[in-house]
Image (cartoon, rainbow, N blue to C red; front, side, top):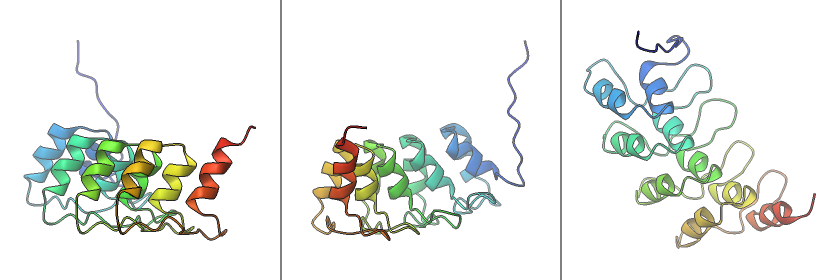
Length: 165
């Protein structure tokens, strides 16, 4: 029986990005030991860094590995369509453990906004992730009244989610 293989277009998805996105912690650790691997290089398709992908997909172990590095910026917004930070991705997808890790850093802005003006709080509220909303609201520096381009606040997004369809 042969080992399963993964087809990866490395021109579009650098190896560290691919490993982080898919939660392959051991591979990420091996790659981080290589001199020619920059763990803060975004992929060519979405402009997301390995940390951003790991946060989006809730891979806590991989996020921890990347946050231990001095050459990884934990608050880098995507260079692609959305302009979201790792915290934004984790909050919007309800990954409480990753949100805790990122909020534990002084160099992460909990009020960062995407290109459309959505904050981690508005994304978590709009997607119904109460635990993440609570974590964010515990921060003294969080702005619960921030609004996006369409002037909608986190409270508006939460209320919309609760409306019957």
